[in-house]
Length: 159
Image (cartoon, rainbow, N blue to C red; front, top):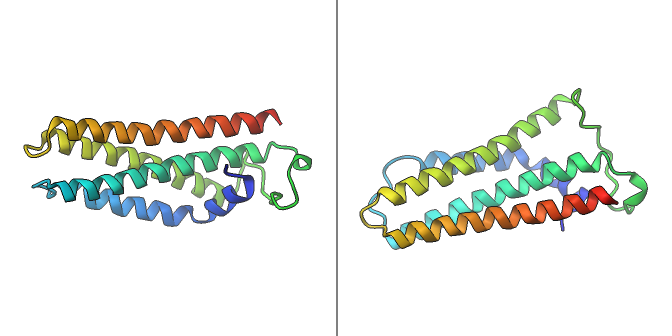
């Protein structure tokens, strides 16, 4: 379970995560990945699933931070209390940059998933089962992460 303090700590590293996802996106969208061997497909799959996991984590962090400003501080333990500025429409420039980075991470990760799916579909070496497995892995990462996010944020909003 991600708590408010962990969300705040993750937000500090948001810019580094955005640059890492951007590097992966740039490297894997270059159309020179053929021939797709099983080792290359395995490496690409690990990178893309890591980017998807990062995007789900960032989305969860942003949800918790937006809920965290609305929570009553009396419900949090002393270790979880973090002084945060309200995230209203007049938030600071740093909050706006962090939110833009979070959106970029999610968008680049989903673009990367789509690009690699298109590459696998068009490949002569990768069979239909590879595309099916890759699609299933991506869907599992996204749905599992979103289920956790919905569960935790809905629990936090009821407290």
